[in-house]
Image (cartoon, rainbow over all chains, first blue to last red; front, side):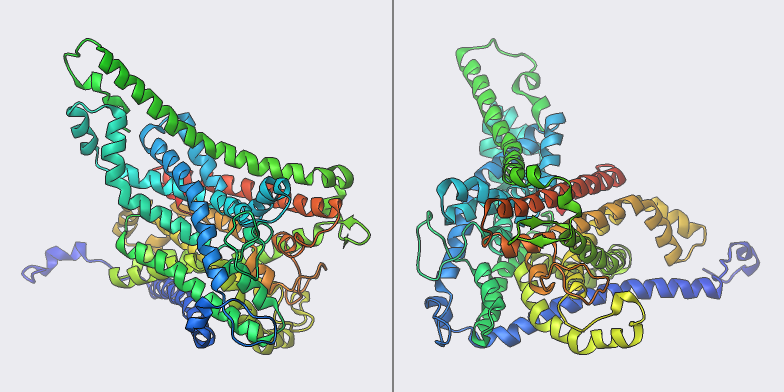
Length: 293
Length: 329
């Protein structure tokens, strides 16, 4: 960089790119930046409209009252909010033990061909449309039971959660340092105790996060509930009966030709988004190393 | 992972097998088998889905045969079922979404992987993850009450006036229809493309970019080299996003208009396979009607499984399995 002997530097001088190439360079960079800026737009618009249209209805009554008949103002979605929690909770009871077990197996023993096949199957399963899972749950639970039920809805949600939990659990269990396993084995612990008392506890934070993320996704699903849990305008805590859920309510209220119902749909959507985003947003902020979804 | 380090191999002078050690080895076996059994439940889950959907559609498969896929008439009253309008609606709305989402997603991924200052990049990445976590029904209500009036009053009249000579933009400005569904779908699948394409770009060897820059390439030309190498993986990301778009239900059901006509115009309302199931399944009376809807689910299932399997193979192949990106979408 010194100016002592400019002649010796001459062969090394880099020619500036031709104007056309420079222009193209600037254009490409500008376009990519524009794309990233454009992505921010829909999120801002959606959140903005949800707040603008839904915030007014966000009263205590919305959380504690039952829906009212058409034309009668007021009313809330208390049963749907509770229903969503029950459905998602039941689904977790089914999906989490299986998903975590399979994920731990994949991380610890899944190196062979069978492991690859399980992994691939879980990945492909995560791409099955939720409506198809709903149709399957209809045949699996609703038809034998003879009626729509919360149980059928949660089976559908559990099937949707399973692949996510499996793959995320595998990922976080793999993150446990090898030295933990080696130290435990060196102390004479058998393999199963190493996994059960060293590896899984070390990964437990990540496993809980992964399960909650899957839970949040499932809580926002509508399509698989339409003809499994169906919906219910009254209080019902029985899992062998139809049960209300927030997403199905929003769908019904948004389709209805009554302005008051449409307003409530917006409020419902706002509540649902807050519930879902709060869980996933907070978790993502606290744990950066988790795989997406 | 640690199977190679079983207690025997780690101890140079293995003690003779006592009863206790044998018990411990048995416990290991039981534990391993039990975990393995939960893993096998994945096959059971997929198997059950396939079994139920096939069983449900058996009557329609038997009665309607191949005419089901090419018939354009859907008349439950006369028990006539042709799924072509829905197949058409699914393919067109998804294609439209891909046209918008792929350039946008790849551009953003390039920005995130190569251009963004770390802080800005973190914000954009966070927004993309938030977009991915918004429930489908929320996109639907936004598309129905916000996007539809906007399209109806501003965008579609303009398209009809200026591009109306194309069959694509003829008809009335309904607001709801293929165009609306395509836009909503594009927003919904963009996060998939961004996060996967970004992972793939980050998995490319840095020497590619360095070599290009050393030869005097501009930044954009260096990006070109990188994108060239990442092409199959990015194609995989796009196909994976396509798979999601094909199966997306609620948002599309709310904004597509739900008619069973085939129209060349993007402004016309239509239906997709997923939306017709969502709309009619609970109201389907009669065995053949229900079975026909289940057969649509079967076709949709087959379509998405094939597409997903293909996409994941492409992604794995490009990244050489070095990054576990296949599980991330």
